[in-house]
Length: 333
Image (tube, rainbow, N blue to C red; front, side, top):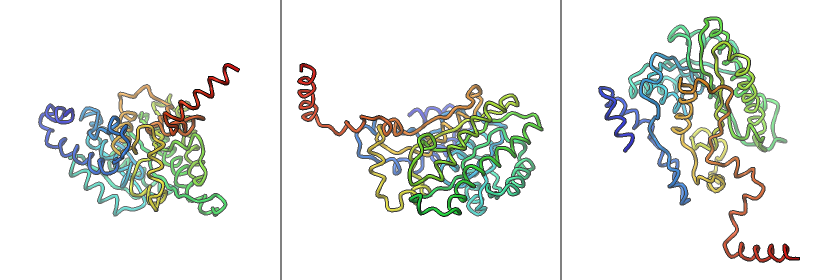
């Protein structure tokens, strides 16, 4: 109902915004289905939350913008008025996504081929970005790579592949664009998408955990150093978001999905739209005093896994009664 009212008051843009809401909400219900009763209390909102002109006149550059979370963030930014430039290695995927989003939002979306592992490719992509759209006000480092493997089975090349994409790629993009912005004396908001295990580490994804932790440190370091140039740096650490690309590599058999949901207090997986809403806020002028922040968005999964006694949720009422009797006897002895 809230989304309907918001569109109704958007005047001449109502038809366009209504289309955008349909685009943003596509697939959410399917990806969030859960039998947990608490999930109903934490159902995801599907519409963009900021005013429709929040990014009017601004340019946004998104790596990995052709699919998954990157596509969702691009869709949200474009629906809010931004001129977006999306980058990845697969130009055919980018072109299809750019056309799809632009046709729904009415705002131009450019596609530029870029291998973030290659500094020369990054430099060429940034030059093209500035040529076609101008200096960006928003930079989202979303490009990533990951797979599950016992660490003893990792080759040097497997380690290098992930760290080159995640850590080096983020650094190359950030430093190249940052230097251009400093030279042009233009401010901007940088955002990196990492993961909750960047903080804790995790077995079986050690290259990703190490690289994402490095990205967190890079963003916090530059938040302190480059704030004086009008540049902000923040991080989102998503919990499990069911996207086709991520789950095909991290849960290829579908075995772990149910177990993942059981350890999330909110009782469901997250959605791309929820990450996109947080991303647009952190990159907007509404968050101009948010700098160096690392925001965990995971339905409570991290704190549930971290708590020493959180597995006691499995204890039944009858078992609690028995334990309480034992505890009382211990106190009186």
